[in-house]
Image (cartoon, rainbow, N blue to C red; front, side, top):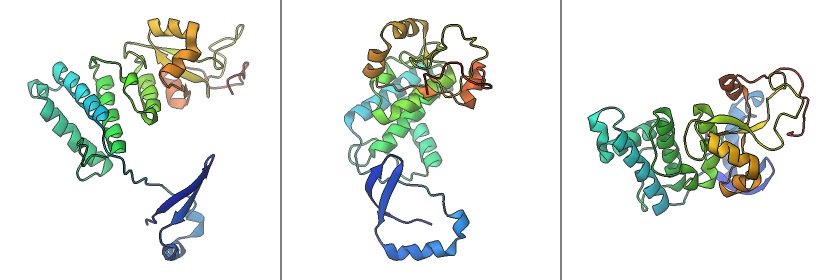
Length: 237
C-alpha cells in the first residue's frame, strides 16, 4: 500500500507527514492494527545530477577500466558504465537510470557512485584520487562503513587497522581483550593516517566530514573484538 504526502516537520526522530489525499486513509482499515506500526518512506528527489557527481562517477569507471577486472572487455569505460547501470536498475528497481543533468537524479547518482566504490574496495582497484574528498555529505557514512568492512583506509584506501576515536578509546589500565567494544566509535585507518589521527583527530574528522561508525556485531566479528561483559571506560557513551 502506498500513501503519498509531504513532510511538515521533523523533531529528532519524529517525522510529521501530511497526506496529499486523506481519503486514502480508509486503506488502513483493511489491515490488522497490530501489523501496521511499521512503515517505509520513499523520498521523491527532484534534484538533478550535477557535473561533480558525473565527473566523479566517470573517474571511478576510468580506474576500473585500467584495472581490467573481469577481462579485456572490461577495459572499455562505456561497457563498464552500461553494466553497472543495468545492475543499479535491477537492484533499485529503477527503469531509466541516467547521469545526465537533464534526466539524472542526484540521490540515485550518489547510490550509483557508492556501488562503484564498493566494487573498487571488493576488487582492490587502485583509485587515482581520494574518494572522501568527492563524496556527498550524506554518502560519507556509507564509505566509512564500507572501508571498515574491507579493512581499507577511509582516507586513502590503503590497507588499514581499526582506530578507536577520541572518547571511545580503551582507557589506560584496561585489558583490550576484556573491555566490551560494542558501541564504541571507530574508523579504518592506514598506519600513516592512524598516526596523524592521534595528533590531530578533531580537525581531521572535521576536514573530511567524518563522524565514525559505532561497533556492531558485524564489525566486532570481523576485527575479533570482545562484545561481552561490562565496559570499564564509559566515556564514549
